Image 1: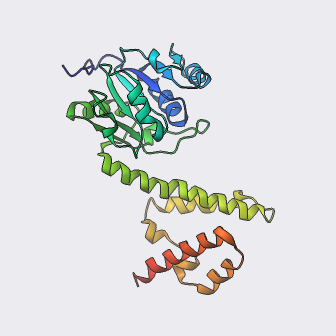
Image 2 (image 1 turned 120 degrees about the vertical axis):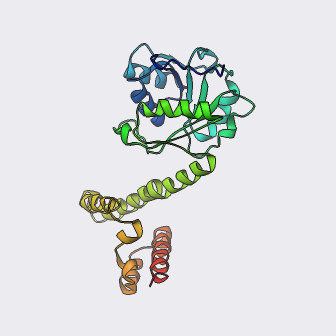
Image 3 (image 1 turned 180 degrees about the vertical axis):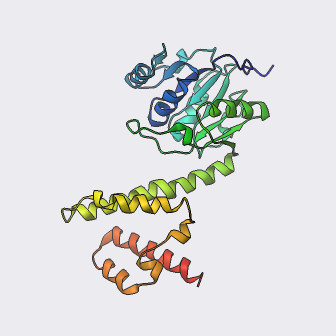
Length: 267
């Protein structure tokens, strides 16, 4: 016996540890296809709010000692720095334990849990912004083949694209996501600030941003590149550098040099 529920006609019973952005979106999606038994959060109010949102008799708790022992899956959706603490402070119940991080290795469970893995949705989540979960790619890893297949089965209930990825591949996925999402978002912060200095709105950039992202459905990021550095227009680059100072000037210079180098090497 591996302790994993094999009755595919039975709704899977899940306890979620965490009530933040990731936990909220996963809870909302899983509640329609699984039985959510508990939401655990240090903030009892966060757990109560999320349980009220999903309904179905889900119990909010603020103490890990109150976790039920009869869940099929314990899903740890907390900050990366808190995962090891949660693993250490919880019992090795018969169900499968999985965290949702892209950067924390599956080894965090070794010696602490018998059945464990990773349940990683590659997406940026904000509580108040809707996400079409079926379009989110999920990457799973299990301590053995049975656990991997089990996590894939659960992910497939809410997502159309589910793949296995070991800790090394997930780290690369997460690193790429930071460049593509977090760093890109910081560039929008800089653009927004530059526009506000002249009484302008970032709304003017929305059509540009939509077309820029839309290009990637048909061409590679390299082929989609435009702008003064792509053209090698040093005069424009220098004129724009003159409008900047401090860290923002250094960011512009560094990124322009990177683009100039990339396209010079391909000439």
